[in-house]
Amino acid sequence: MRLMIVGSLNGQISTAGKIAISRGAKVTHTEDAEQALGALRSGRGADLIMIDVKQDIAGFIAQLKEERFVVPVVACGINTDAATAVRAIKAGAKEYIPLPPNAELIAAVLQAVTEESNAMIAGDASMKAILQVADRVAPSDATILITGESGTGKEVMSRYIHQKSKRANGPFISINCAAIPESLLESELFGHEKGAFTGAVARRTGKFEEANGGTLLLDEVSEMHPSLQAKLLRAIQERVIDRVGGNAPVKVDIRLIATSNRDMEQTVREGKFREDLYFRLNVINLALPPLRERPADIVPLASMFAAKYSEQNGIPNKRLSPAATEKLRAHHWQGNVRELENTMHRAVLVSQEAEIEPTAIMLAGQKAASVAQTAAATAKAVEKAAAPASNGDQPALVGRTVADVERELILNTLDHCLGNRTHAANILGISIRTLRNKLKEYGDSGLSVAEGGK
Image (tube, rainbow, N blue to C red; front, side, top):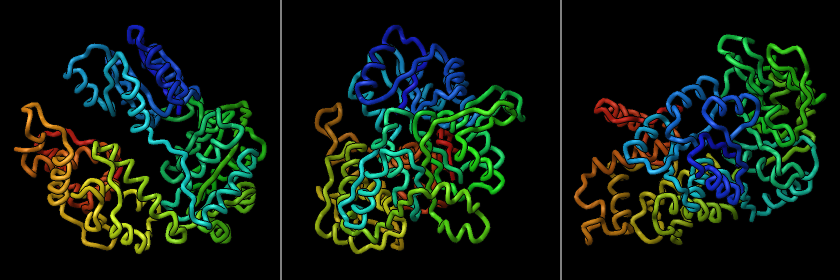
């Protein structure tokens, strides 16, 4: 993980950096926000930015958005009061860290904000066979095409291969070809020169250059427009790119991994994807099976997600009851591992027992509980586990209304999903329309609601 620290922080910067390095992060330091933007434009990318609260956080985050740098920002400061921390969060920071730094707190923020994981659970025979192939080809520089349904773990497999490769100490750069408009994707991939188009306020290094010495993941490459596929083919063949508006070719040294949830051969036959590019990408093909075809992995994955979200939500580790286990095994899992993760996150929040009971396993196709029921169940579960409040003998949630707890649960879940309403609705077990109505109600009452995806 790449961490960029912005500001001087009165000497505490070296301590925070050392803690992050000890936790596996690669740390760079810039004196101010303008230097940080320059570093990002030049290809010194970051997965997380820690910035001094004395910097113009709101302006910095606004500039990141304008130049399409998608990086979570965490504010930090020395001896700052609560109001300063609140202002930093309102300015767009995802978290606030007080300094001098606490090692465990920084480690928790690194994990919670970036959520990077290279762990592979492959107990099922079908997945074991694929993992064996991945282990054999990972040390090479061969281009790999990973295919499979949405939610099967293609990006996790990509990170696993990178960590097993000889480029493990280099950057791992990912770009979702389906999430970026065609007019911007070329610039994102290859970079641009200042003035190349409206909004190009400075030279910017693209993902190919940013991944130099490491691995570049082209996620959902089959969604790339045919006009851009020819330029990608040249970059793969010659390991040379041209920045938008540039005159001189730029050499790159990368290992390329691509993913797709489509039948690539059918896409080629339909004329939507270049055949020569397909063969260039498909040197090694790893076809990930859907979760329903690897039944031996369902329970281990569910247990891992239950432990993860129990820890994140400050709840004692929730284990699966036998009845809940059987319910998970019997489900079809159309949404694959992603659906399972969302299901377990929701189950941890609504479970009222020491073990996750079957009624807490709310599956697709079943009538979801109302948001009020979800909030009430969560409040009851947290009350059981919560430490006594300052009055010495009453749980912290006693005396609060269900509407109050409901609002806090919805907003915290939305913040956890970085503003993605669809993901938040899935976790909460409610419809997207219900969530939007609730958020409109909160916004009308003057509360700040996180912005993000649909």
